[in-house]
Length: 447
Image (cartoon, rainbow, N blue to C red; front, top):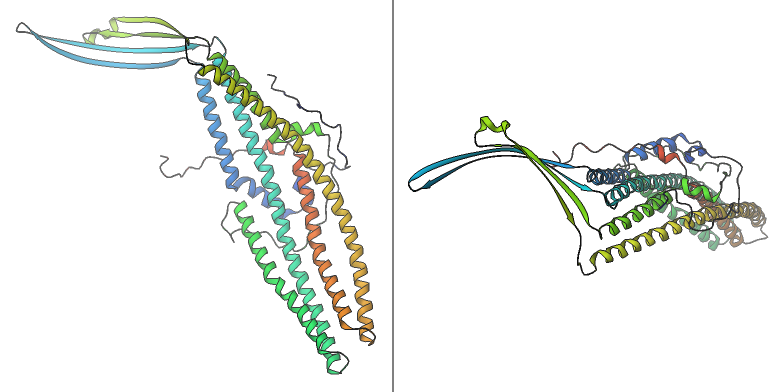
């Protein structure tokens, strides 16, 4: 099978949306946030899931070395010394035997079984490396979302404090008018309820903030409360919309697709191995060494021998044929997984793109809604102070405005999340420059 495997399905020539700005290879740099950049560096060095992925890569590399070793002769050495004593017809005889031999065993790769095994193992290494890169791309997106969520909670807490001050001012106005018999006790109770409602949201926001900070610490390979997210308390502006490229580029920019392609080729080679196992195998053995009854004469007597062994199946009740069928089914599964990975990647780009665009529209409508809500509150408050309107209208408009303000923060953070999803869906070559982490040196029982 050609290892430069193209898409098994027809891809669109372009996406439904296009950008004009080429994003940096490391997409998080587009936000121009030094603290986020530092956290990303820590993540790529310290995240435990990523370190485990590099360890799995080392496992597959070791297996590839073992597979490659089977193509070369295996040489073993043996040294034997023995002393035998016999008594025959009253005569005692003692015999010594010394030998020093080496044996080389080699399987001739008649049907390319060994070479196919080696290629499959090498492709497993490529797939394992791509798996680690795919995980790195997923983790960077997760960290960015977590960091922005932390900032969202900080901004929400600051907004809640502002809303508390506004509600306290409204309460003072209502209590003053109640003292002047210009308002009812119901209006006072209603405003106090509004104040308590805002106060009740603060503990929940604080708890969510701490939970997110703990989540960030674990992503960085640290215990909760041992990582700092910086001091930023307001969400950044969204960078310019990126150029999406073409769907075909995903085959190289997405490491999960590259891994799926490598697994197809590995599965194809293993079909060849299964077929080769149905045919005879030829093994050569070369023995050579020294043998003598006196150690002083050991290197004077050289002996050698060459044998060949041709072994093939005669009857196995269909076992090897079933293995071929199984390997072909594994290959078919890998092909389906590859096609699905490509389609899912294109879908993820389109989904993230449409979500961002629609979220922008939602924010525009929300801004319009907030503008009219502020005007409605001003009008209701003015009427109430003039004594021509009830306080329920004021309270309704105040609660509506405060709810819109909180929704606006959440919507801005969601917009950032959709951009992160878009960057992740596009993929990139930055992960190919990652250096695998070094093995841990202090492991109990490893020495």
